[in-house]
Image (cartoon, rainbow, N blue to C red):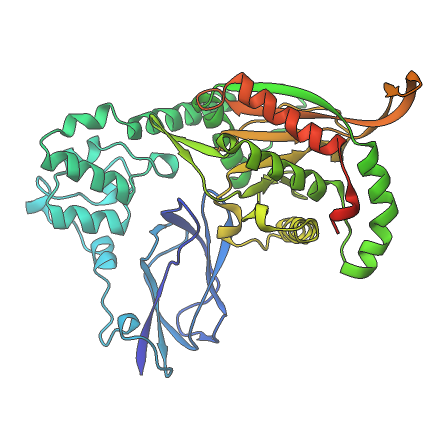
Length: 437
């Protein structure tokens, strides 16, 4: 029988580790291919990890609440199936696990990493493996700023330190961008802690934040600390769009089996405006601006729990309006059912949130890092408006909405941010549905 290494798979862009939240299978359990073996949570999404083979679970190397690095061996499954040689172990060995279970060698404590119990920080098995190989001391390790969740040290932090050490400039660790991120995350943590210090009065109800709400709080505070937010507001006459949708929505549903809402229509024209102003589709990295090739639209979705998640429509510029409609409906439905995959909530380059769904006429959003802009859509309302005609100006009832464009002033100045919002409004007002379906 072969023994298969079940590893923690990639969990999406920028995700280096995950927290084990539950074991679905116990040692000795029979497992079928695609059965969920354990569940994990990252700072972006909860996810189930299935087995790629059928067999018996014979070893588990982590416990609930342990932090696991991407690629770590989490369990061993004994199987009769033929599997790739790299995933076979004749004798079950897991050096990372041995480091967790072994008592610290007191003779090496001065030169090598101490166990978690001896340190004020958590170090994953992957970090321990790198540190042991490189011979770093505990003092060195403690001074390296961590950029992972809750300031944890991740692989990139240690590798960056080793590069600086080779060049003889380890002091750079106090001035580079990793420290900036660490300070920002520390400030976020302190902000939440300060809120907990408020004394509840008689009759007040204390509600503990769930994990997702804590993550949202961290991201929002961090975004405001990192990006100087600026807003531009534009009013758009969308009467033509409202009339067109009312005319085609029934036939569209019969033909495509999908309801067409206003959201994909607006996203369609936002994408067109991004192609006109590609410097909106950028990210900031230190003193560099990264112009993104792909246009990936994040769409904010409210969950039944009251929390928020932002699934991403990849390569939105390559989709027709019908394709966008299907993508919006699919992602929104699966988001509410907690069925999104990790890579479906990562890689966004611009975000859209439709506050009109909740009857709000306008909203001022918070940028979804590392993006530099987002657009909030207000509700569509019947408004009296001055309409220019060949016979002269007149007052008419028009369907109007407010577009709120929020952008990061480090990368986007007022002219670009304002012109982009205006361009979206122009596309909406000059709408012609004849060529869309």
